[in-house]
Image 1 (tube, rainbow, N blue to C red):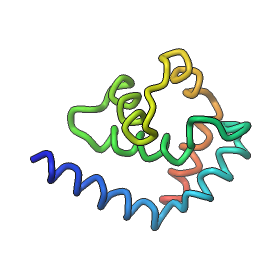
Image 2: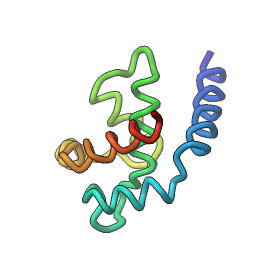
Image 3: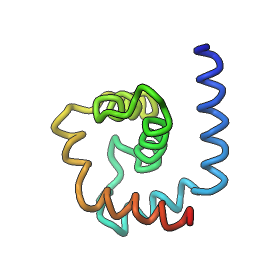
Length: 102
């Protein structure tokens, strides 16, 4: 079951990379103000973590989102840092992604 979940996540990531090019996400994250400079949190990892969290039947919590981001980015953010990322610029980035899907 775990192997299936991992392979489904990898397949989802490959599919999403066809729709959302990582450089486009990073460029738009910068233009929306989500990323002022490249640090430890890659906007692409944030987007992928959110999609994996929302798509998971048991992970639709902010704590699950934070854990998914830690798995994607290889580093668990402090709660205060994580919460600061959930700002209007993050909302704008996600809205851009939704519009792009339409």
